[in-house]
Amino acid sequence: MYRHGAVTTPAERVIARLWNITLDRITALQPAAADLLRTLAWYAPDNIPTLLADGPADPPALNAAISLLTAYSMVTPDPGTGTLAVHRLVQTLTRTPDPDDPHRTPHHIQQARAQATDNLTTALPATWDDPATWPAWRTLLPHVDALAPHTTEDTDTDTTAHLFTETAGFLDNQGQLIRATSHLQRALADRLRVLGEDHPDTLTSRNNLAYAYEAAGDLERAIPLHERTLADRLRVLGEGPPTP
Image 1 (cartoon, rainbow, N blue to C red):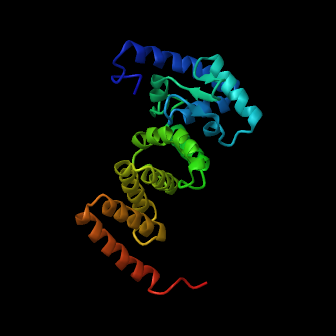
Image 2 (tube, rainbow, N blue to C red):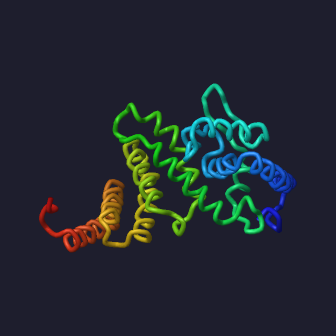
Image 3 (cartoon, helix red, strand yellow):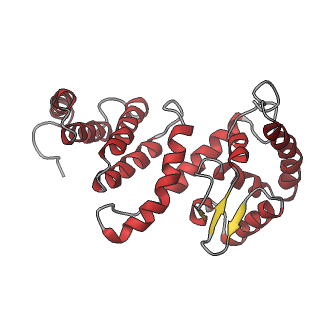
């Protein structure tokens, strides 16, 4: 992308040249630092909590990776908040696959996207209806919002669907029904593709979306979805309670 016609501004051309030189050096010194940068590219550019950078790295290795990226001006730590920042152009380049770039192969991009999704999902509070968890949710929400438009339904996983479902619960709790509904729509599309129409999680996603439509007063979409979900639950799960 950034080697050919998509490079349209001087800033993008400079970033592309610096990227190749810098990533060669970083990868030679510490491959985990390059992996970390690719993961950070999927979040919002500012106020990235370090818990979203954890991944499989142990704390000393993570600190070393952050220090190396900082030394090469690829990330900017804020000691006062314990967060990281990455320039938007660096993020855009980092998450854009290029089969001719050894640091941005499709495999690298897929791996980083999955790691970012896993990190966000692991960081989610256990509940969204306890006010004590709301500060944590508000910290993570910009990064979920950043991930969503930079991924597509054909690359989403069941982990992505779970992330969007839980985030929708928090947004609904906060009275942000439109945003919650958008996440529920995406979660249902993901589970239909990944798990199939009859999987219990898919049925739950369809039920959640039906209730969101109902709460918004959109009965034209809510009622048919409720009816279909009930029919499918009866067909797949039966009428009685699950057998222990």
